[in-house]
Length: 281
Image 1 (tube, rainbow, N blue to C red):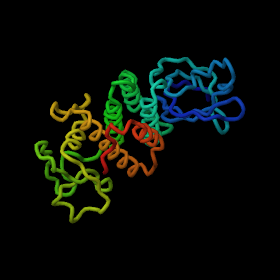
Image 2: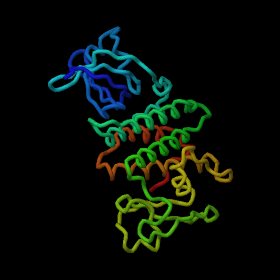
Image 3: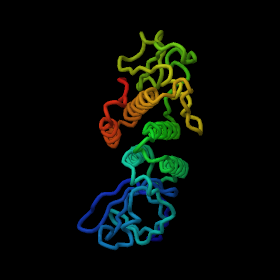
Image 4: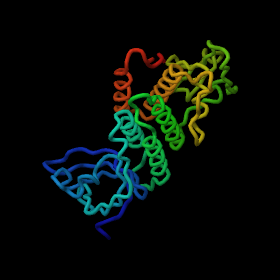
């Protein structure tokens, strides 16, 4: 039996190991999640230094070990350098990496997740930098859609087009400012008010704009707020609420905390007070 194997993978996580090495968590097309040692990656001028960076896509030659496998060769195929130069985009990428680690399998091909993550990292990288006049809610919008797509891939996307209890369709009324529905992670998604009596207590609230955005996240293209709702305040509050609702849902179903989400929160908490913050959910 061969003691080496080839794999194409995206670096999702990196930790120092020993004096000079790194321990990488990599999503590979062929074998799913693997944890491997990048020997000497922390040495000055190491060939594996740049190749062991976050979100770098490499073709690896890996040697099997007793406890941990070891990288013997790595050839970079793609990277996303613009993510590392923008704090919000980097935080969004780390957020997605965590969700993938919670969802992806080991010892099984994970080609669909590999290409899904690659596509959404590329979309994040292509967004304008989030300083100056560029609106950081665009990163939130892309992050929310990526999370929804990953949940759909896992078979646990929330039900947002019908009430989880009554099964009746939900049509948000954008003309009514007080229109709302409930969202319950343990029930699997949205709940009409008439279904509340038999629903769990732990619920969040969605207004018409937020539900409209959620209902469109399954599509390939990113949903846009309608022109009369496209002001900066609506954009911030709507996308912040959508991200936090999806975060709550994802954490509930995977039973894990998304630690990188704290970086997202800190970013928006640090914005000037003249900009709106997240709606309470």
